[in-house]
Length: 318
Length: 318
Image (cartoon, rainbow over all chains, first blue to last red; front, side):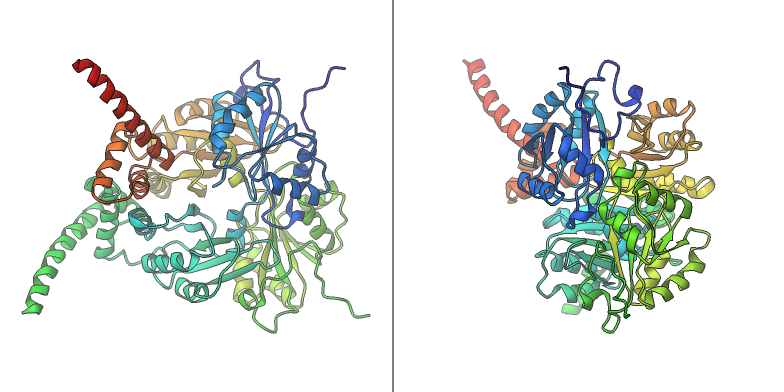
C-alpha cells in the first residue's frame, strides 16, 4: 500500500507554491509552529489537538510537558517526539531539516505561547526558509498579546522587549533608551527580579508611569495589578511568585518638549551604544519631535553645565 | 429558584480579589477578551466555544460573523449578542459596564485575533478597570505573533505599528522615525495599499532591508513572500488581495556587522579593563547589536585561530 503524504487534515494547506516553496519541493514536509496554552488546557485549539495526534515529528521544548498537554487534551501522540530547546536547538536543526526534506511535517511546540517569540524555533525557521521549505503556523495563545489586552494600557502601538538585560551597562543603556519610548512596552520578568526591574524602570521612566504586572495569566491564581510604577514597586516588595509579563505605558506625548537635560541624556545613551554624535542627535530629534538644532544646543549646554557644576562644587567646598 | 452567578465554567476564575477587584464586587461580572480565529475555525479554542455557549452577554465586532463562527463550531449561543465596533464602541461602553455591575460576564470577540490589539475593546477595558471590575482573557490567535513566527526575521525584540498613516506629514514623520528602529517591525496593511507602503518603506529604510509579506494567514490561500523590500515591491506590483500583515527587519547596527576578529578584540579590551568574559560578551553584544551567541563564537574562534597562527608562525619562522 502506498501511504499518502503525511499531511494532517487540521494543519493548513501549503501556501501558494510560487512564493514559499520552489517547484519540485511539493513532497517536502512543512514546519508548523503551534501556539501552546499559557496554563489552562481549554485554551488549546482543536487544530493543535489534531496536529499532536497526526504529525509524524514533534519538536517540543519540554517533552514531558508536551506529553502532559496531549494527555490533558485526551490525544494519543502517534508521531515521534524530539526535545528542542535552547541548549540543543543548533544541533537539532540539521536533523529536522533532513526529516522535512524526507517529506515529514515537523510540529514545533514550546512550553507556552507562540514558538519563535522569545523561544526556541527561530533558528529552525530561518534554516527551513533558507532550504526553500514551507513554514506555517497553528496560531494560539501568546503572553504578549494576552497581557496587552488585559493591561488597560494603549495597544495601538507597542513593543516587546523580552527580558531586560540582568545588569551592567547594557541594562542601563536599554533603560535610558526606553525613557524616550512612546509605545506601550511589554517585558517578561522572573518573579525574583520583578521588584528590582520595577524600581529601575521607575527611576528611568518616572515613578508615575502607568503599568500593569500580569502574573500567572490564564492560571488559577491569575492576578493583574495595575498602577503607577512606584505603587507596583511597593506591591512587589512582598513575596512574588509565578510567571510574570510586565506592561508599561509609553512616554506621553507632551505639549511641552522634553527638557534639555533629558535630550542630552538620550544623545549620551546613544553615543555610549556606539553611534556618532551626529547620528545620535538626528535620532533623538526624530523620536522626540524636537528640532535637530535644539537637540544639539541641549547637548552643548549640558556639557557646559557639567563643567560649571564642577566649578560650583569647588566653591561650595571653600 | 435562585440562579447561581452566571460564571461559565470554561472562563477563568476571578483573579486574586485584592488586586483586580475591590472587596464587595464579588458579584460583578467580568470582561472576558477572547481571541478569535484569523481564518480556519479549528484555530478556535475549546474555551472560546464553551464561552460562546454560556456567556450571558457577547459583544461582537460583527454579529453575523460571530453567528457564523458559533455555527462552524457547532455551538448554540444562549446569551444576548450586541454589536460592538469602532463606530458604536463609545456609546456601548456605559451599557456594558452597567450589565457587568449587574453581575453579567461580557465576552468580547472581534472579527479576528485578540481584542484590543488594534481592534475595539480598549475603551471597554479602560472603563471596566476604572470601575474596579475584573478584566481577563481567553487567549487565542493574533496576526501579529503569527506573522512574526513565520516571517523568519528576528523576534527577540519587535514592535507593532498597526496601519501606517495614509499620507502626508504624519506618514513621512513615522517613516523617518522607523528608519532608526532596530526592532523587527509589524504592520497591518490593506491589499490595495501594500505596493505603495512597500515602496515608501524601501525609500525610508533601504531597498535591501529584509521583510516578509504575510497574506491570508491560516486561510486556504495563505502566502508568505520573503525578501528585500525592493523585491517585495516588484511582487506587489501585481494584483494583491486578502488580509496582509507585513514584517520588516529592524535597522542593523551598522551597514556591515563587525567582523569576528573585531568582536573578539572588543571583548578582549573589556576583559583587560577588568570585566569578566561573560560581562564583556554581553556588553559587546549590546553595543554592536550582534547576538551574544555570535560574539561568543567569535571569541572562541579567535582563540583557536590565535593558537593555529602561533603554530603557523612558528613553522614559518623555522
